[in-house]
Length: 140
Image (cartoon, rainbow, N blue to C red; front, side):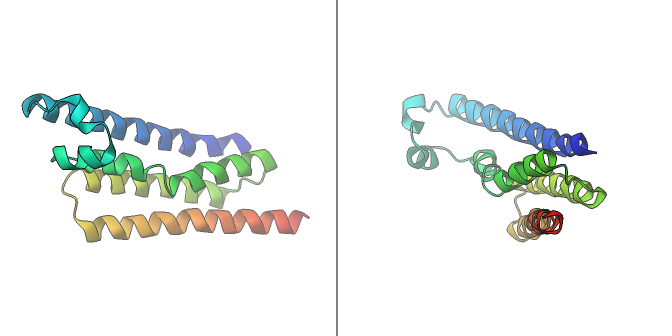
């Protein structure tokens, strides 16, 4: 069961790759259409001033905030051989919620819809960490 935790991890990486692809596609298309010089978007501050469609870039950055805790707990679960069916369910739920969050963020971007999904996904990862800590404590 230890290796099963890597499948949701791989799915999360695929999500990051999809959002990165969307970010690059929308950014390049906008820069071409509006004839924006690449040098004028050299920093995040200047990019925010020059570009209008930044949702995918914002979401891409967001995929390296709380998800880092997800990557870490999945690795820790595998290393310590403490993967359980509940941890797997939480991992898949986390990835599914993050996919919904990304979809909302890069499409219609309704903040309260996005926020609810974000909170639910964050709770999943914190519960995973709590269960992991309990398993370590129980096993000595």
